[in-house]
Length: 197
Image (tube, rainbow, N blue to C red; front, side, top):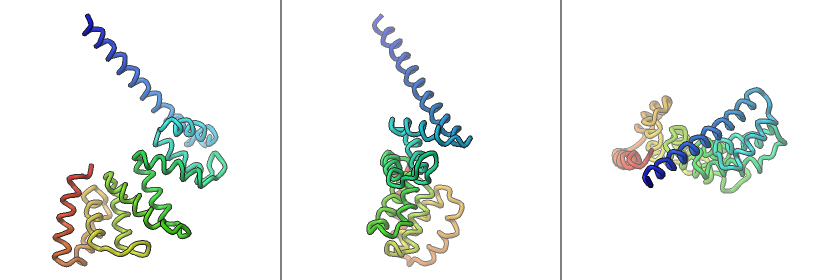
């Protein structure tokens, strides 16, 4: 008898968890639908509630609403708070958005390092876009020192992750490296491939 009660309890727990997941998904879909329909006030309210409960997709969407002033008064500072929360919890879109924002900011002393940090986090999470953007930071210089071997590593990973525009750039970067740099880069690529999702 105790085993049957345990199994019944497990089934009930699983049903409640699954039901909660469906409810959270439907709330998020309601918010997305309201946004798509142009009901930005309702979307803002729904995203706000979901974001406060820890939904990283809602945190990301809410951050963009604040940054762009859609459905609420524009508040870039508050938008960055929500964007950072989502990124810190693993939302790759938020990581990429932060990288791009910090890339564009020229009034913040450590903006280049922050762009590098967020693109690297996205790259290490397996994002082909993060890998591509990180490669370009190393390729283009300006904000950080040019490092063509690192650019080659990240562009190669972006290419192998499925980025269709990275392949041509890999060829160009490969031609710019000497044999030792290329060998070292290939070893680093092999090592990173084992750790990336």
